[in-house]
Amino acid sequence: HQVKTLLNIPAEYEIYMAGSASEIWERILLNTVDQFSHHLVYGDFSKRFYHYATALDKKPSMQEVPWGKSFSSEDVIIPDQTELIGICQNETSTGASIQLDLIYNLRKRYPDTLLAIDIVSAVPYVNLNYSMVDMAFFSAQKGFGLPTGLGIWIVSPRAIERASALRRKGKMMGAHHTIEQFHQNYKKGEVPSTPNMLAIYLLGKIASDMNEYGIERIRKETDCKAAILDKAIEDSALLKHFVKSSTDRSKTTIVAEVWDARVLSTLQRDYIVLSNGYGMYKDQHIRIGNFPAKSIDDMTHLAEALKSIG
Image 1 (cartoon, rainbow, N blue to C red):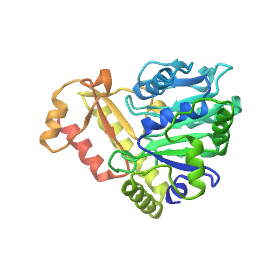
Image 2 (image 1 turned 90 degrees about the vertical axis):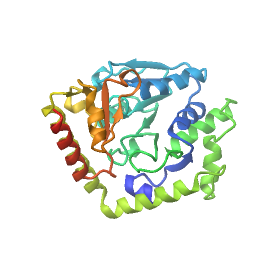
Image 3 (image 1 turned 180 degrees about the vertical axis):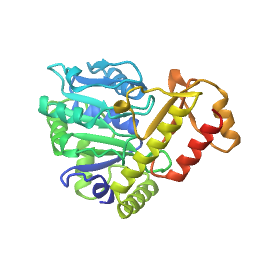
Image 4 (image 1 turned 60 degrees about the vertical axis):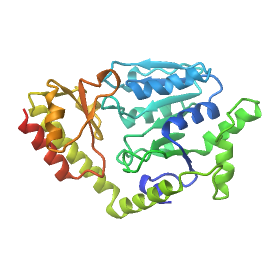
């Protein structure tokens, strides 16, 4: 209830608990796609969703742009046979993001195609209109600051009906955690297998605290912290934004190219630990999670530390 309130999720949508967001990729593909999914790829995680479809013997297609860039609505073309469009709204590996207007535009252009949105590193900041998508999913360890091991899957009635239709056609939907199993248990207030009860309880408590604090306040503070970090990167001689376009730049995952490897080690001496780049950018980038657990004072301190080393 607290998560639905916080994110303004429609009452008729259901929320299922899985082991991780990665598991949910597979559950979505097995339960709602007969053959054809299409994926917008602009980083490692959006590409991995596509690779899951390939591994499951689906016939996925993808449209890809260079890492560090995003998509514009007029450039996105969805193949006619597509049953589901997979979109990573916030690409954790690169710090790029997809504008919500693009997602809503795809819903209008392709009303019969399911939309599945990865919001792992965007929630609770992203103000997504869930009624415009069929599924959205995230993990609890980023925006909610919990340990790993809990994936949250938001599912529309239309996605549930698609799963039922595929089952009636005799399609193999996996033996573990099908949408129909989740749905039947959800109606009874139960789960199909023993979940991470502690993490679920803590998620509810954190969402309750966030509701009391105010989601709009959280979003405004996130914008403020992002602006502080953007300025620090722009003023640094050792860093530059990996995502050049400010409109494509994530507010929750700040990624900078590093011109001097001493940046991370120097920060660590001040007890500031940042993430390396992801994948092929491991030694070329730093990544900063701009999540609610970090305060404006935290980000100001980090910005000052970056300024002090160049």
